[in-house]
Image 1 (tube, helix red, strand yellow):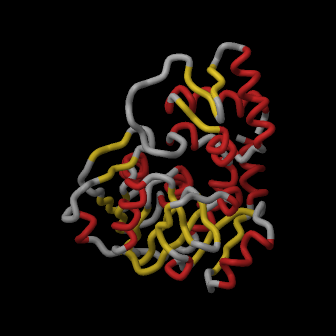
Image 2 (tube, rainbow, N blue to C red):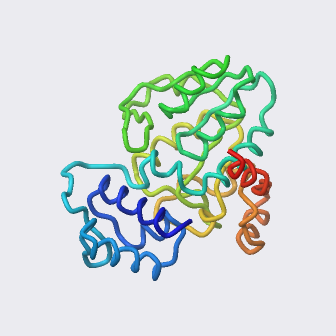
Length: 267
């Protein structure tokens, strides 16, 4: 990622979140701590953000709560080629006429492009995934009841008895905050709760995670590796990164990122 593009994302993220730690920026942007510190210094000297101990603050902080993680609109621009390649590979795991569950996220949103000509029964808690599928496909779409969280563009419900409890899918497609030998991880308890509900409605779990997320972790485990059937990642994954998944009998699919880099260059 180019320096100015990375700094633009930092400013937008801090404007959305008011305060962001250096550790979180490192995880979200996949840059080194030294790089993030330099970016914060540059932006603070230019008056675009305020530098604080351990992170940065917006010049005019907002006073509202938010979900942990990068906002949807910003996250779509990060590692876009890898996400598209992962989505293409994941779409190849879907059989015609299947019932599937798609958890919200920008990596799973990339699946939409490859489902346009399918005839599937889909449950998703993602507002943009649902809207795009309705506009571009003949798939049958079900969404749960609940509140739309604008930052992440997902629908979260505090109630146990909603449409989710009446749906069954062959596969659950989900992204994550991070994944390692301890399992799939998220950073916000509301997202953990929502994923746990979806997990009960699917037979197999397909995790879509770019290689950066294989080195990212949180304190909140959604599921152990034993519950995961397939991990789809990109060619940036090192053998040491995926060793634990194969040891746990998780099938690892490496997506061809080169073809999607070429697609991006020609677009």
